[in-house]
Image (cartoon, rainbow, N blue to C red; front, side, top):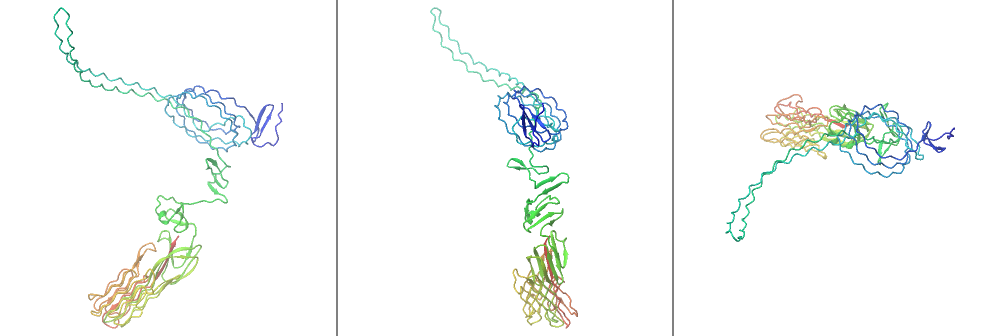
Length: 587
């Protein structure tokens, strides 16, 4: 008899005709067979060794869930068999819609548990069969036959526990103690009337307790039973369409069309209105990381930039700055771009704002010439360092030249020229004083050294915070000696004990990636001897007759020129060293 099925059915639609129910699985109508009630659980037979797992068949369409029958009584567990090898894990098919849940039957009585055997080895995980098309949420029907399980090998049945070993024999009983001595027997009375029975002798003392015998040896443990059979694995329920990444959503699987992974192209894709968060670190926390893999991405909260590790250092991914001007260096200091100006120019940035470090040193002052006397050493150029925010744009850079040394004859040294970057100015170093005449240019970034009764120059003029320099050292009239020029790291030395004062100490900076001392003062001199150059570019105080400038401050350090003394009209003070401007920013 022909059946009259509906045309154009939807997935999992139910059709009933002549007392038989059918369900549409997307390709054909499948008969729904009513499930009978659950019988009692028989006694489990012994589990044999598991065979190798076959290749998993395709997953059949899941039938609707029928009413759950009553649970039968639990049978005794069979012996545990040897576990089969684990099959490969199959791919999880797409999850069909679950049928309505039937009523739970009454729980049968619990059978006696079999003794615990050895746990069998877990078989290899097989590949999961392909998932059938999801069924619609129709009337609950009988349970469809499940598709064949993928490569997972069955675990052998649980074996009964081995018998309990025999209890060891009880140790032998200790020997009883000796019986106490028998009391004396009373005298027998005269024959005739029976005399009264004599008093009972006192019982002898109980002998000492014998030692307890040793406990017998423990019986050997019974052999371990074979492991029981492995229960069927539970089914995972994937959510969403193919390629969607699965995640835990309040205890259930969930997928999102905007979060996918294409296994063919190895592509992880975020959709519109989706975002990816990265870990945040300060520069100190980032630099403390160990075993960092190439390609690791973080957000640096110190620099407010996204950064990636290239295997040796961190590159900037966001707020990328393009800069020009001076001599550009990206290797001397890890993670920084450094621009060095030794002459005037323009620093230009584009792309993003930066928080830049700077070192600005003005030109050093010239040393004084004083033939037959003692000229003061030149002061170092002003020394300013710190950080400043820079927006995209162009910034003129001025690099100050060193002041000329005095000479020939009694001539004071000239002040050095200022260096400027953005709105920050470092003042040129003061010139060294000559003989007994006040030198009006002796104040400066660092002051020039005094000579005889001419006073030394003040430092940090005009004042800045922190100070850009220090004062020069004073001279003496008798004996005739001059003071050293002030340096960025300390005041110029004061003349004493017939010796000229040394130049003031310079200051060190690692803005380029290595520590360099710059901006020391020029040395003073006596009318009989000079002084040595100190680290930081300041010139040495020189004694003797000279026809050309010498003992200058070193170029691009801002060091002061050395003072001069001695006989003859041709004595020149040393020229001050030119200044320098250095700018560095992360990236």
